[in-house]
Amino acid sequence: MILRPNIPAGNSYIQVIDRVLDIPSDKSVLGYISLSEQSDTAFYREILQYITGEGDYTKTVDFMNTRPRITVFVPTREAIGRIPKEKLDLLRGNPSKLNEVAQMHIIEDQVVYTSFVYHNEGINNLGKGQVIFRTNTAREAVFVSSGGVTAQVVRGNITCRNGAIHFIDTLLGYKYNTAKDEIWLNPITRTFKQVLERSRNELQNAVVAPSGVTLFVPTDTAFRNVPSYNNIMTNISLINKMMELSMLEPGQEIELTGVNGAYEARLSLTSQYFRNPIQVYSQGNETWIESGYVKARVVRPDVGVTNGYVHIIDAVPGVPSRDIPNTIFCEDWLIKSSLQLAVTGLNDYMRDVRLNSIAPCTTSSGIQSAANVYTAFANPSYSLNQQGSSQGSNTQGRPCGSNCFFTVFIPNGTAIDNFENMIAGKQIQADNGRWQNVLMRHITRQRIYLDQTAIGVERTFTALNGDQVRYRRATTRYAYLYYKGRQSRVIHSDIGGTNGVIHIIDAVIFTSDDLYALSSSPSSHSLGVWSSLLSLCLFMGNVLRRLC
Image (cartoon, rainbow, N blue to C red):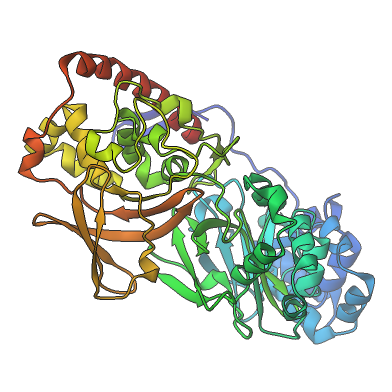
């Protein structure tokens, strides 16, 4: 810990820290591995002798001890223990494969620490490939991939005299389970196993195809977060749909290590559910997929299997686990937007009253925390106007009801910032009645899925405040919203909730008429100020819990 930072000292700075940065081990890398209780010393010594390709352990010792800098990835005892004996014996009987596998675990002439690598950064290993590091902002979990296999670092950054050691939970470069075996044996995918067993025979057979299998497998927790979990297990039609949305069409083996770069760098894949798309992209040092209008974080990518790839995800394709307000709240770039819905009472109006509990957020940094915004954001001082009530609005601070479905074109945080910096925006936000009216223009009770809208066709919806708003899908990626000469671009579409769908836009749609719109009465405005402050305090409490 830095106790006193940035103390000026001539042309330098001094950082006062709370401990001596000494060498944790005076042993060599090989010496530390040999004595560690975590490593299966006998097996690792066995594969290490093939690093030079000659099966000579003495030459391996010379090679590793004479390197001034070296990074070694060591499978733990448990990692080796999970490999079936017959599969391990097959590896032992194949010297060329042993040489290939052994070299994937060595980075020569570099000491690599997980704290100093970028997400999806690749570093050449001793063989002809690379070790790809996968991490997130919180660095709560670090994965390394090589040879089509991904392993988690269970104890990393052990510094020795001539390098660093990272203990990992899987042997790199050796695929020994089929996709079905991986699902059956993985302790966090038991619910998906039950779903697979109840799906139709055609889907079960697809999982055991000899090659070309790619599966996005939800964890047990993902299933528990679904409000209608009990109904899922008895609904065969839904089970088949979930399976199809979790599987790529036959022959598509996708390694997610290749998905890197900016948010714009995305893959559009094809699921087995009527060829519906599965979008894969990077955002916030995480890899995400969207399938069946559900966004899921890839918690363990590229689990290499003998007939393809399995990717573990934290949501169930086709079955949302959060309603509209909580889905918005859980998007990192919509926190400020969620606040605006809160202070105008629209959060509470759009909540799904059928839900007894809400799935926790998963932020881009991997942090999870409760995001139940209902009571925190209820603002009893506002009711939707009379035009809105004709669309099904309830009175002050009450939810719309159990049969309400919404489409929300929500301005992102940057759009809210830009609006607040305008003179007109400041004046509109100063009166919550006017600001509520503007936000209601972005919400409709109609169901609008942009991926089901023909490209180039312009359509109209009736907003909650009675305005007629036009929208047009311009390309497969972008759409536009129009109202009285104003325009906003849809930059992310079709994020599903239990009671609706969300499209993220890049600007608030407003006109000069909004400055003179009918406002709330003085008494309700006064009460609204205090309610807004209370909602703001409660909202920030939720935000801080997410970030901390």
